Image (tube, rainbow over all chains, first blue to last red; front, side, top):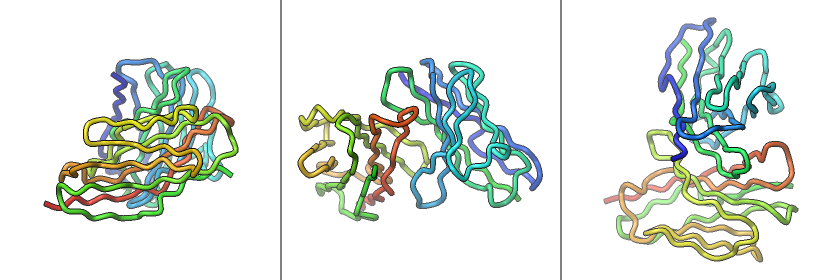
Length: 115
Length: 116
């Protein structure tokens, strides 16, 4: 149980394009999903927290117009990197948490390379 | 302040050795949760254990064991008879009772290399 998928696992795009990453909880309903960014050999950096049906809460320093998050259902959240630039290249990971549970279960991550 | 410290950045051991990964945390909350996650080279974070602040019993799961000591604010992780497949980055994390949505506070991780 507690499986989270992410799609795509890899994406290479040109500078200026937008990229959408999907995060799905496959066998449970996730009232809260989290989006993280991780640079090589570093820890996870929380970007935003999203609750189903409401606006995401962004961490300080994260541009909400740059990183659009939609949590339209209890099993799906999406992160759209708008007008991507090379500095947005990173490993993006989502996690999902069932209401009342303290444990976050993570997706396999998406590696984004912006050329 | 809420903080998690993993003082060991990198550890290298030879297969079958025992290894302990240290985790020290700071929080003023009386109720909180502690976690360990494993991140193998593939990148996916694998949940290993969750412990709440009221349960100080040590836990053993196969070759893995955890020692929770509130008196020293530590939650250390020991791998017995390490194997090459244990090579990964291990993160310790804290979920304080207060705050929105139970955000996790992460340590910087310990990179474990188990050599044949």
